Image 1 (cartoon, one colour):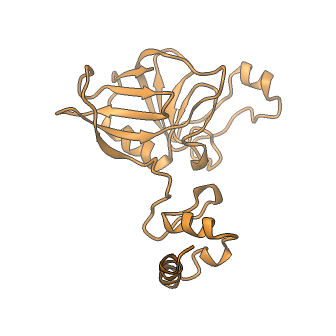
Image 2 (cartoon, helix red, strand yellow):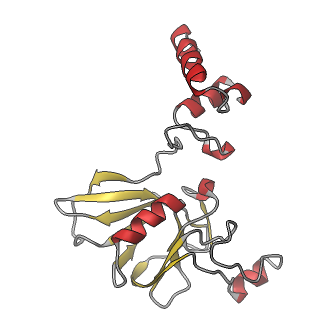
Image 3 (tube, one colour):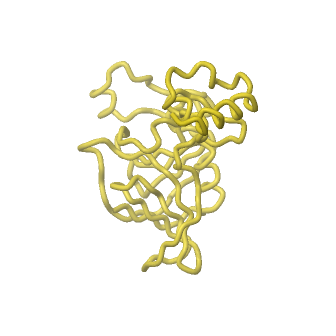
Length: 198
């Protein structure tokens, strides 16, 4: 680490106080925290940034989709809400693990705040210790704070109590978002919105 980097780390550490920098185990961890927080360690800085680059941002998105359409890029792990003038709002997502990814087009058929969650029988067969039901509003509920249901499937775009799962391929086919991002998307899209998964 250069003298300039050490000085920068020291200055920001003094500014942030005991926000976790002193507990970092290496220079790399300190730099990760200074970029916005080592989210894998649950550390966030005072600006509310998590350092992952997965939060909502506006991007150029020229293409064939009508404004208001949601496009899910499973391979890149991005969800796009198409806007006017060749732009989109882009959100980081978690996607299905190997064997649980899918493609297709559906409509949002329902939206729920603080949805309850009941695992399907197939999930119980794979994971016998999974809870049989979780009430909405439970901080451990795997659907998080908001859910948008896709067609007549069991798939949803939903929040997650585990922000670190966003950007990963760990789900059973649903699209996970950070709770702050799913709440933002939820307010922007109505029932009937087209969702294209590719």
